[in-house]
Length: 195
Image (cartoon, rainbow, N blue to C red; front, top):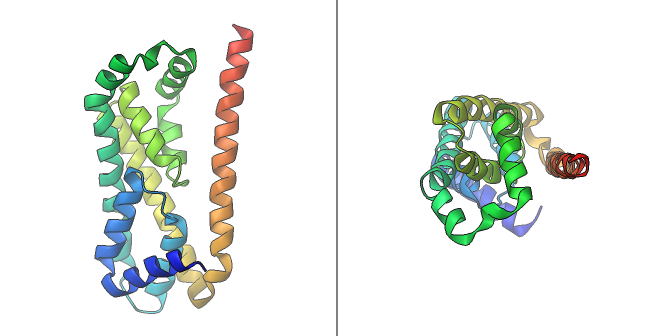
Protein backbone atom coordinates (compact mmCIF):
# COMPACT_ATOMS: atom_id res chain seq x y z
CA UNK A 1 0.00 0.00 0.00
CA UNK A 2 1.41 3.37 -0.96
CA UNK A 3 1.98 6.21 1.46
CA UNK A 4 -0.64 8.28 -0.37
CA UNK A 5 -3.33 5.62 -0.02
CA UNK A 6 -2.33 5.06 3.61
CA UNK A 7 -2.82 8.76 4.30
CA UNK A 8 -6.31 8.74 2.76
CA UNK A 9 -7.24 5.65 4.76
CA UNK A 10 -6.03 7.23 7.99
CA UNK A 11 -8.25 10.26 7.23
CA UNK A 12 -11.21 7.91 6.80
CA UNK A 13 -10.46 6.23 10.12
CA UNK A 14 -9.98 9.55 11.92
CA UNK A 15 -12.71 11.69 10.37
CA UNK A 16 -15.04 8.92 9.13
CA UNK A 17 -17.99 10.35 7.21
CA UNK A 18 -16.49 13.82 6.71
CA UNK A 19 -13.44 12.26 5.05
CA UNK A 20 -15.58 9.90 2.95
CA UNK A 21 -17.70 12.84 1.80
CA UNK A 22 -14.70 15.06 0.96
CA UNK A 23 -12.80 12.33 -0.91
CA UNK A 24 -15.78 11.02 -2.88
CA UNK A 25 -17.12 14.51 -3.69
CA UNK A 26 -13.80 15.80 -5.04
CA UNK A 27 -13.24 12.52 -6.88
CA UNK A 28 -16.61 12.87 -8.58
CA UNK A 29 -15.68 16.32 -9.85
CA UNK A 30 -12.18 15.62 -11.20
CA UNK A 31 -9.58 14.54 -8.59
CA UNK A 32 -8.33 11.03 -9.50
CA UNK A 33 -8.58 9.35 -6.08
CA UNK A 34 -8.57 5.53 -5.88
CA UNK A 35 -12.27 5.63 -4.94
CA UNK A 36 -13.01 1.94 -5.42
CA UNK A 37 -10.15 0.96 -3.11
CA UNK A 38 -11.27 3.52 -0.53
CA UNK A 39 -14.84 2.20 -0.66
CA UNK A 40 -13.54 -1.36 -0.29
CA UNK A 41 -11.55 -0.26 2.76
CA UNK A 42 -14.54 1.65 4.17
CA UNK A 43 -16.62 -1.50 3.86
CA UNK A 44 -13.95 -3.41 5.77
CA UNK A 45 -13.92 -0.70 8.46
CA UNK A 46 -17.71 -1.03 8.84
CA UNK A 47 -17.35 -4.79 9.38
CA UNK A 48 -14.86 -4.07 12.17
CA UNK A 49 -17.22 -1.62 13.88
CA UNK A 50 -15.35 1.62 13.13
CA UNK A 51 -18.40 3.13 11.46
CA UNK A 52 -21.93 2.33 10.36
CA UNK A 53 -22.36 0.59 7.00
CA UNK A 54 -25.52 2.51 6.13
CA UNK A 55 -24.10 5.88 7.16
CA UNK A 56 -20.97 5.22 5.05
CA UNK A 57 -23.19 4.17 2.11
CA UNK A 58 -25.45 7.23 2.40
CA UNK A 59 -22.48 9.60 2.79
CA UNK A 60 -20.66 8.19 -0.24
CA UNK A 61 -23.85 8.17 -2.33
CA UNK A 62 -24.79 11.77 -1.55
CA UNK A 63 -21.18 12.96 -2.07
CA UNK A 64 -20.90 11.19 -5.42
CA UNK A 65 -24.24 12.44 -6.71
CA UNK A 66 -23.50 16.04 -5.66
CA UNK A 67 -20.01 15.91 -7.20
CA UNK A 68 -21.38 14.45 -10.43
CA UNK A 69 -24.08 17.12 -10.53
CA UNK A 70 -21.50 19.91 -10.10
CA UNK A 71 -19.50 18.58 -13.06
CA UNK A 72 -22.66 18.24 -15.14
CA UNK A 73 -23.89 21.74 -14.29
CA UNK A 74 -20.54 23.39 -15.04
CA UNK A 75 -20.72 22.38 -18.67
CA UNK A 76 -24.51 22.60 -18.95
CA UNK A 77 -24.36 26.26 -17.94
CA UNK A 78 -21.00 27.48 -19.30
CA UNK A 79 -19.72 24.68 -21.54
CA UNK A 80 -21.33 25.71 -24.80
CA UNK A 81 -20.05 29.28 -24.44
CA UNK A 82 -16.50 28.03 -23.84
CA UNK A 83 -16.71 25.60 -26.77
CA UNK A 84 -18.12 28.26 -29.08
CA UNK A 85 -15.40 30.76 -28.18
CA UNK A 86 -12.61 28.18 -28.58
CA UNK A 87 -13.99 26.80 -31.87
CA UNK A 88 -13.72 23.19 -30.65
CA UNK A 89 -17.13 22.38 -32.18
CA UNK A 90 -15.64 22.34 -35.67
CA UNK A 91 -13.86 19.02 -35.05
CA UNK A 92 -15.81 16.00 -36.33
CA UNK A 93 -14.63 13.80 -33.45
CA UNK A 94 -16.22 16.17 -30.95
CA UNK A 95 -19.44 16.16 -32.97
CA UNK A 96 -19.47 12.34 -33.13
CA UNK A 97 -18.77 12.04 -29.40
CA UNK A 98 -21.62 14.45 -28.74
CA UNK A 99 -23.99 12.44 -30.97
CA UNK A 100 -22.92 9.16 -29.37
CA UNK A 101 -23.59 10.49 -25.88
CA UNK A 102 -26.98 11.87 -26.88
CA UNK A 103 -27.97 8.46 -28.26
CA UNK A 104 -26.50 6.32 -25.45
CA UNK A 105 -26.58 8.71 -22.48
CA UNK A 106 -28.30 6.44 -19.98
CA UNK A 107 -26.13 3.34 -20.31
CA UNK A 108 -22.95 5.45 -20.59
CA UNK A 109 -23.73 7.33 -17.37
CA UNK A 110 -24.71 4.11 -15.57
CA UNK A 111 -21.60 2.12 -16.56
CA UNK A 112 -19.09 4.90 -15.92
CA UNK A 113 -20.17 5.10 -12.28
CA UNK A 114 -18.12 1.92 -11.78
CA UNK A 115 -14.96 3.50 -13.21
CA UNK A 116 -13.80 6.55 -11.27
CA UNK A 117 -11.63 7.97 -14.03
CA UNK A 118 -14.33 8.12 -16.72
CA UNK A 119 -17.16 9.35 -14.51
CA UNK A 120 -16.15 13.03 -14.33
CA UNK A 121 -15.50 13.14 -18.09
CA UNK A 122 -18.96 11.73 -18.83
CA UNK A 123 -20.47 14.22 -16.35
CA UNK A 124 -18.91 17.11 -18.28
CA UNK A 125 -19.90 15.66 -21.66
CA UNK A 126 -23.48 15.01 -20.48
CA UNK A 127 -23.91 18.65 -19.54
CA UNK A 128 -22.37 19.75 -22.81
CA UNK A 129 -24.49 17.37 -24.91
CA UNK A 130 -27.68 18.66 -23.31
CA UNK A 131 -28.71 15.44 -21.55
CA UNK A 132 -31.69 16.39 -19.39
CA UNK A 133 -31.07 16.81 -15.65
CA UNK A 134 -33.81 14.26 -14.91
CA UNK A 135 -32.23 11.61 -17.15
CA UNK A 136 -28.72 12.37 -15.87
CA UNK A 137 -29.80 12.09 -12.22
CA UNK A 138 -31.84 8.92 -12.75
CA UNK A 139 -28.93 6.98 -14.27
CA UNK A 140 -26.38 8.66 -12.01
CA UNK A 141 -28.23 7.69 -8.83
CA UNK A 142 -28.79 4.11 -10.04
CA UNK A 143 -25.16 3.66 -11.11
CA UNK A 144 -23.72 5.22 -7.96
CA UNK A 145 -25.98 3.20 -5.67
CA UNK A 146 -24.93 -0.02 -7.41
CA UNK A 147 -21.20 0.70 -7.56
CA UNK A 148 -20.92 2.08 -4.02
CA UNK A 149 -23.03 -0.77 -2.67
CA UNK A 150 -20.95 -3.42 -4.44
CA UNK A 151 -17.61 -2.09 -3.19
CA UNK A 152 -18.83 -1.47 0.37
CA UNK A 153 -20.41 -4.94 0.58
CA UNK A 154 -17.27 -6.55 -0.86
CA UNK A 155 -15.16 -4.75 1.75
CA UNK A 156 -17.57 -5.73 4.49
CA UNK A 157 -17.42 -9.40 3.46
CA UNK A 158 -13.64 -9.40 3.04
CA UNK A 159 -13.11 -7.68 6.39
CA UNK A 160 -9.50 -7.53 7.51
CA UNK A 161 -8.17 -9.17 4.30
CA UNK A 162 -9.57 -6.44 2.02
CA UNK A 163 -6.03 -5.27 1.16
CA UNK A 164 -5.32 -8.54 -0.63
CA UNK A 165 -8.09 -7.66 -3.10
CA UNK A 166 -7.63 -3.90 -3.44
CA UNK A 167 -5.23 -4.20 -6.36
CA UNK A 168 -7.78 -6.39 -8.14
CA UNK A 169 -10.42 -3.66 -7.77
CA UNK A 170 -8.03 -1.04 -9.19
CA UNK A 171 -6.96 -3.33 -12.03
CA UNK A 172 -10.57 -4.11 -12.96
CA UNK A 173 -11.32 -0.39 -12.98
CA UNK A 174 -8.46 0.31 -15.38
CA UNK A 175 -9.42 -2.63 -17.60
CA UNK A 176 -13.02 -1.38 -17.84
CA UNK A 177 -11.70 2.13 -18.59
CA UNK A 178 -9.39 0.84 -21.33
CA UNK A 179 -12.13 -1.29 -22.91
CA UNK A 180 -14.62 1.59 -22.82
CA UNK A 181 -12.17 4.06 -24.37
CA UNK A 182 -11.05 1.53 -26.99
CA UNK A 183 -14.66 0.71 -27.86
CA UNK A 184 -15.49 4.38 -28.27
CA UNK A 185 -12.42 5.02 -30.45
CA UNK A 186 -13.22 1.98 -32.64
CA UNK A 187 -16.84 3.09 -32.96
CA UNK A 188 -15.85 6.65 -33.91
CA UNK A 189 -13.20 5.41 -36.37
CA UNK A 190 -15.56 2.82 -37.89
CA UNK A 191 -18.30 5.39 -38.46
CA UNK A 192 -15.70 7.73 -40.03
CA UNK A 193 -14.57 4.97 -42.42
CA UNK A 194 -18.14 4.12 -43.42
CA UNK A 195 -18.92 7.78 -44.09
